[in-house]
Image (cartoon, rainbow, N blue to C red; front, side, top):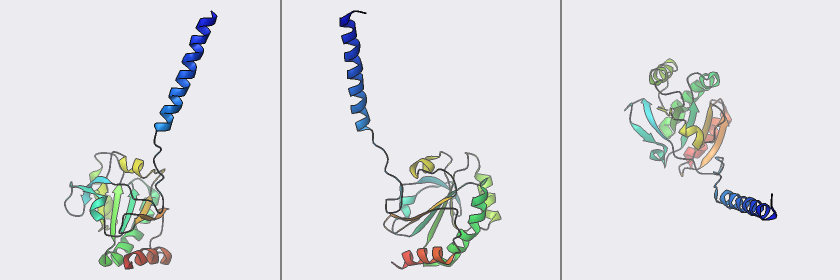
Length: 179
């Protein structure tokens, strides 16, 4: 190869490298979803109770303390956790706690989700997001995962499977409700 062609190849490589670096500088890495940060918006369809099929948004609950639980019917840890979430809701729901449990089951699983809620006697909000958008927005690596969100929309607690009947968890949520 002639010297002029080598110069051309070198110039193209340098130019491509500079272009790649400049392009990477413009990429925005999403901020980590963590305690102290804002709760990302969630848009899903309500499965129950009340108004099944209605599209709902987490932002509709701004001004309330929310326990956002992301789960699936096929998940054994979710099955273990749900009864304690229901107990927490029965105790603190009258004081203003909103519980929103978003199923990430596949599309068409509404009957399974409804059956799950009936089996466990769940009386709090059950939503369905078959698109996986909530998993991306909250950067999940598995289920169940829960986020306690304060009245201002800030994540105050983030946890994997938890026993919400434990005194420390109950007191944490009760304290937020008292603020």
